[in-house]
Image (cartoon, rainbow, N blue to C red; front, side, top):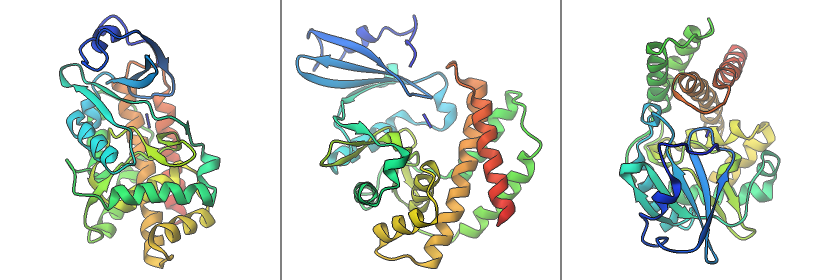
Length: 295
C-alpha cells in the first residue's frame, strides 16, 4: 500500500545531520519513487547506502504506530529477514535503515515457485519469531478507516454498507481461528528485496501481532495468485494443502481487499500526495463485492 520532495516543513539534509553515523560525512541524497504514504530518500555516503523515510501527513490516522514499526523492523533485522535499522528520530517521524541491496520483486516473479519458496521461508521465519510489539486486526482497521473517512465527508459508493455487513460475517466465521503471531500485514511484491541469495522484507508500518492467514491472504491477493499459486503457497508454508487452510486463505484474501478499499478512501481525505486514492478504494471495494457475491 504504500516521492515527491518533502517540502519546506522538513529539510532532509538537516535530519541526516542528527544521525551520528552520517553526521559530517560526504554524501548524496536522491528521492526514491513508489511510495503511497511517505517520502523516501536514498543516501549514499562514502561507499555505504541508506534509506531515509519521513512519515507522510496524519499517518497516525491510518493506524500506524511509528515506535511499533521500528520495533518490528528491528525484529526482522535480528531474524535476518530485514535490513538493519540505523536510527529513529521520533520527534521527526524519520527512520534511517540500511539500503537493501538487490531488487524489488515483481508480481510475476512472486508467482514463480522457486521465488515463492524463498519468500515463504523469510515470512515464516518472521511469523515464528518471538512475540512482537503491538497488535493488528484487519477487521478493526476497516471499521476505524470507514469511521474516520465518514467524519471527513468522504463520498462512498452505495455498496459500502453491504460490504461492511459481509465483512462482519467473515469476522464472525474466523473468530475462533489462530493465535496471534508477528505479522507484516502489507505484503506487496515491492516490499520483498531479492539480492540473489536472500529475501529481505521492508516497510513494516503495519507490522504487529496478528493472524498469519491475513499475511498469507494479503500476499496472495496483492500478487494476483490463482488457485495453483495458492496451493503452492500453502504447501510451501505448511508442508501440505489442507481444505480448512485454503478456506481461511480465501476469506483473508477478501478481508485484504476490504482493508485496501477503506485505506484508499481514508487516504483520499488526509494525504497530500498526488495519488487518485478514491479510484484505488473503488477498485478494491468492487473486487471485494464481486468475490463475495460469488461465494
